[in-house]
Image 1 (cartoon, rainbow, N blue to C red):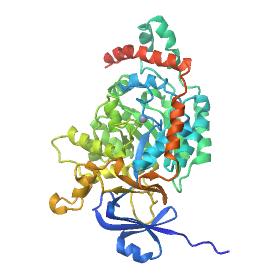
Image 2 (cartoon, protein in one colour):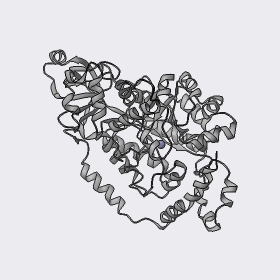
Image 3 (cartoon, rainbow, N blue to C red):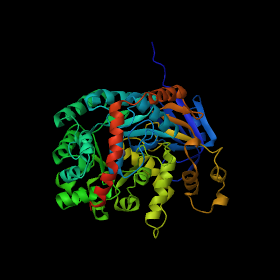
Image 4 (cartoon, rainbow, N blue to C red):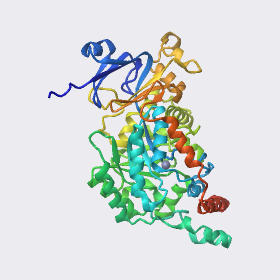
Length: 510
Ligand SMILES: [Zn+2]
């Protein structure tokens, strides 16, 4: 029997940004066969080349590469809905222990649907285990959840092997607590019951089962969770393992001023300088947050090819600050954007996150020319893909050979007039980036009409095609209805009781 010839689909749009840093294209189309784009260009030409192919989209849409969320945690709901109030990272983290432990498959599925509906086709998931002894099961369930939703995922199994509650001064801190609270705090002072060898064994197993460096559906990467929480040995082992297995490493770094102080107190140099001294900096590494990076260290990061995942909402909500995005870009550091499960409106709206990154970057350096809109779109697409899957992953651009991950944004709706003004250059002045600027200033998740990932429509007419969204939401609601265990209520009470002591401790830290 002859195999069926491959089916080709055409997707067209009145306006498109196929290359985030290139000019806008009018009446643009792509042809998709299987998972890849096989042609891209003026709509009439692409249609003529594939006269029998089905056609989707049309003049009322704007086409973008699908967005890449370069750092997140896939909790399903935000941490505030799960009972953890925003505060300084160092005080907020203990509260995570008391979150309702949503089923990891369901959390990833629900979060994946939220992200898809926001135009996100790829997520980097930094895992927060519910139960360290079951991390292998949680990892598999989480990866399955995102894949069943329809996203690509870079999965980061974490490890922490020091300073789980405080960066230093444990004895003095414990002595400052009332005896009952000191006893109750014991679980917060324990590092996870996983040795380095067990961790590398877990990574090896997950790589073997899931890692897909050809089609980039799933990447398994290493994650010493963050600077102060990981020994040099753990970081060095993780880097060596990642390099020998052709995968990447993602860590939290310099999220808070106290983490910056930690490095200087411990080694007399900054975190980037110390990581460089132990051989950890290289093109395999992505660092999340980097709010407190010294500008002097940016050329080193650029030279080593280190990526940065910028998390503007999270950095505001956890009172960390504003990362020096403009300086990073000026130094040549590759940057992507991550929601970190902490979007300003708790809605995983990636377009708004780009908007926030844009305004904060310009705010932080008011004397400079405003950043071009194209720079911001690149952070959410090609830049994000480079720091998530590596610089050669064919994502973040709509061109022949690239994976067919794209978004159609509707311009039929939108308060503020951005959609009306989009096609009226006479109103808009001479700047060629005006259409993209209007889009990035005005569009949000409610304008995302369709999302294709790997040649499959995951969202059409504003609805996900892969799952019954209402049924998934009902399943999450049912999980939330389960009563909290006594142990979890005690952990929540202890985290709350520790907060004023932690606040006082860090007030005197620097
Ligand atoms: Zn994070």
